[in-house]
Image (cartoon, rainbow, N blue to C red):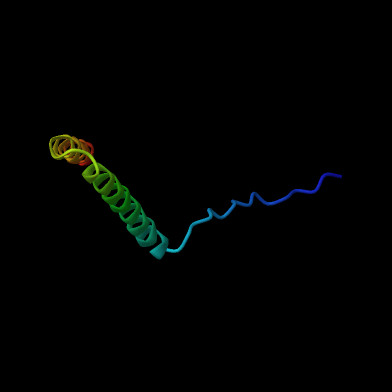
Length: 66
């Protein structure tokens, strides 16, 4: 004889709500840290090249955000 098993739905695994806040904070810390490293590395170049590089980085960042 075949036993009938009830149709059980698997419970969806979800993380607690505060993990979303932690993820966003981590995202912004990493993004701003990378920008700071690029800016500090760019300062080691000539002034004109540094300004162009930082300007292009900021324009690229804001274009991708908006």
